[in-house]
Every structure is written in C-alpha cells, then in structure tokens.
Length: 369
Image (cartoon, rainbow, N blue to C red; front, side, top):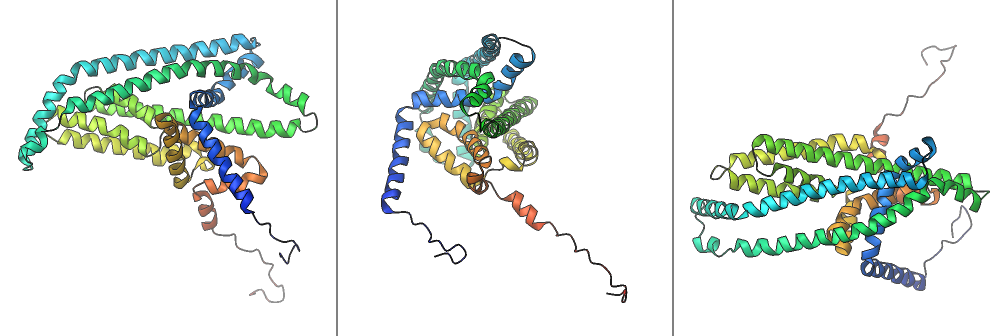
C-alpha cells in the first residue's frame, strides 16, 4: 500500500499480460499479411503531411475548389516522380551497358591485389561475379516493379486524404461540439511537427545527395549522379543507410583508378566529412531537440520494420518513430513515453546548467553578512 495515497499498487494479471502479448502478435501478423495495402496507406499518410499545407493554402487563401487544388498538387507530384523515374532508368541502363567492362577491370584489380597481398589465385578465380550480380539485379527490378504497383495505391489513398484535409476541422466541430477546440489543438500540433520533420528530413537527404554527387564528380568517379541519388534515398535510414550508400562509390573508385588506391581513399574521406557534417552538426539544428530519437529506439524500429516489410520498412522506420514520438508528446497521459523515446541529451544539458545564485538581503546591522 502507498502510504501517501492509501491505495494499493495495481498488479498486472497473467491474463491481461497474455492478452496483450497475443494482441501484439496478432497486429504484427496482420501488418505482415496486409502489407500490400498497409504500406501504400502509410506512405500516403506521410506524404499527406508534406502536401496538405499546399492544398490548404490553395483552398483557404486562393479559393481553389478542393478537387482542383488536390489535382494540381498530385499532377506536380506525378511529374516529379516521372522525371525521377526516367533519370533512374537511364542510369540503370547505362550501368548495365558498362558492366562487362567493369567486370574485366574488377578481375584485373583482383589479380593485382592478389599478387600484392600474396592471396592464392584459386581463391579469386573461383568467384563468379556475373552469377552474383544477376540475382541482385533481379531483386532490384522486382523491388522497383512492386514500388510502381504500390504507387498506384499510394496515389489513390493520397487523393482521398488530401481532399478531406481542408474540411477536417469542420467535421470535428460538428462531431465534438464541446471538445473540438482541444482536439484540434492536439491534431494541428501533431500535423505541424510531423510535416516540419518530414520536410527537414527531405531537405537534409537532398543536400546529402547533392553534396555526394558534386564531390564524386569533382574527384572524377563515374556514375556520380547515381551514387548521389542512392545517398539521397538511403539517407532516410539513419547510420546504416549512410554506410550502405558509401560502399558502391568506393568500390567504383577502386576499380576505376586501379591499381592506385588513393582516389578510393579520397572518396572515403570526402563521404565521411559530408555524412558527419550533415548528420552531427546541421541535422540536429534543423530537427531540434524534440526529434532527437534514442539510438536504441531507432535500432529497434529499424529491426522491426525492416524484418516486417524489408527495404520499404527500413525507409519508413524513422519517420514512423518520429511521428509516434510527436503524437505521444502532445497527449499528457502519454508524454512520458515520448520522453523515454528521446536520446536524453536535452535533459542532460538542462541538468548541467548552473542554477542561479540565491538572492539574499544584506543585514543592515552587519553588512558583512
């Protein structure tokens, strides 16, 4: 019994715990089975936070009809996606055409470093690079095909979400006349912060891709634009994405400038400078302390969503974690969970600040006191 309140602490029964575990397993099973619908719905939901301010501006300020405003935004999104798809297709075709030449260069590089490092020849000759690259190309093509098929569902969900955005506040006031203002304050705060986070994440990823592209083009690495595009996409996956995006350009520099390894070393150093500068100095200032997620939370979300939905799940893991943290922070009863999801650096800095000296009134009889 708690002596301060006179109440007994509530105990979680075995039945409640078992039901909770079964509920989590059931939700995970449903998300796994229904990923063909759930993934496009989540992508559309996240995109709606980026595009809803534009739709609201067209409808509320410029007096566009809702359907016309959504149509304009969706058409611009389709044009941007179409242009990006053409560029990606051209880069893939160019790389596929040049792959035989790179295969010869790679074999020569392996022979050179094999002799230099005294590696047995049979250990290198037994590697069939064509058979290893083939399945990777097939997996990549399947991923893009599934992504294109999901894009249709994303577009359908997004249109309906954007059409309803300008009138969501009116519906809430009609449904909850007494509590509408409080609910709107919470939902608007969540929408603003999630939209700001996703916009900042997009800008940081875009700057990363442009810096990688420019640096590799300056060094002279072939397919610099493709590696910059890869860095832009994988930057949505913290830490792991940056490492994975750095491997292909380093290998390309190693093969392209063989037998010299210094250009590859230069690529490694340049990529480290770009990633560390943007990740450790610029990104925290853009995101702010409120979105400073704990590394353990990021790792758990990456493992769970990556296991559940593969590459798409890994890309959605951190935006989902940030959205959940923002939503929890706006609900007083669940705010402690949002604090626990953070890294704690904000509170550590607050505790290290020197407390102000107490103001005392001097004793007029003894000024020395």
